[in-house]
Each structure stands twice: as C-alpha cells, then as structure tokens.
Length: 57
Image (cartoon, rainbow, N blue to C red; front, top):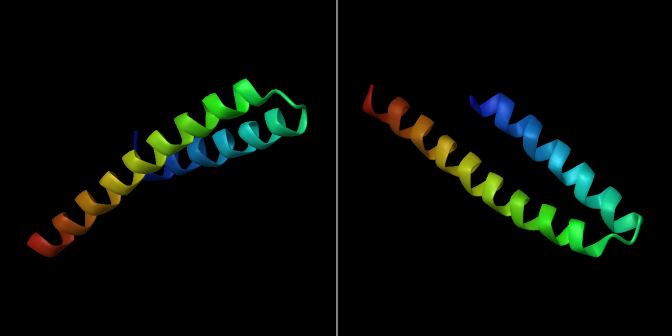
C-alpha cells in the first residue's frame, strides 16, 4: 500500500474509533485505537523510507 492509501486507512480508522466511542462500544474503540497506533507506526516507517530515498539521490 502506498503512503496516500495508508493515510486514507488511518483517517477511516480514526473515524470508526470515534464512532464506536460515541456509541459507547469501548471494546471496539480500544481495538481500533490499537490498530490506529500500528497503522501510524507503519505510516511513519514509510515516511522515513521515502526521506532516505530522497537523501540517497
């Protein structure tokens, strides 16, 4: 998945987490929070990789 696609997944997961919390589904909100954390780590890794590629050119 490219960076833009991953950013869309992060945004959608954030929305889903907030919806679950509003609906008082705290177990689902917590699961989504954890998933969101992993997605953000992956996104950061992709950003670092992109910067390294630019730096090495």
